[in-house]
Image (cartoon, rainbow, N blue to C red; front, side, top):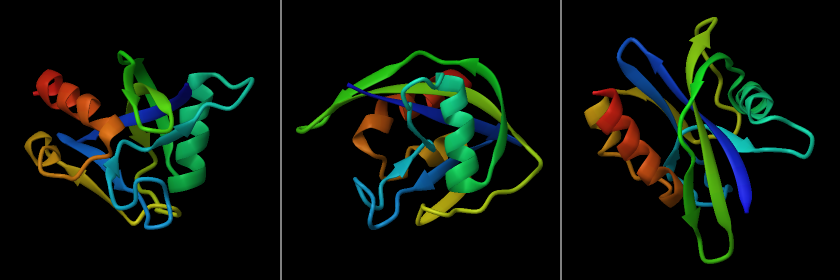
Length: 128
């Protein structure tokens, strides 16, 4: 099972989401940004590293949310979400096609990666 940490970043009543690039798995689908937990790395270290590498974001982790599981035809994933706060303002999308800040209702209109759909619904339901 692939273990992936991801960030739910709230700022000013909006949530950050990223659209996967055309060369990535599940191209052009929206996701909560993050990445694979590497051997010897904690889930918290992973999310901080991934956001720094892919988006040049510096975050503060507030709390861990429940894990979500999804099985694709060729692999399974454990999505490990963290509620986070953005530090030092902006970001630069180095690997993603697009990024944005969305209201909770707007999240429902995006074309999400399958593994992120249940988490997105959890965020909308529990953060309203």
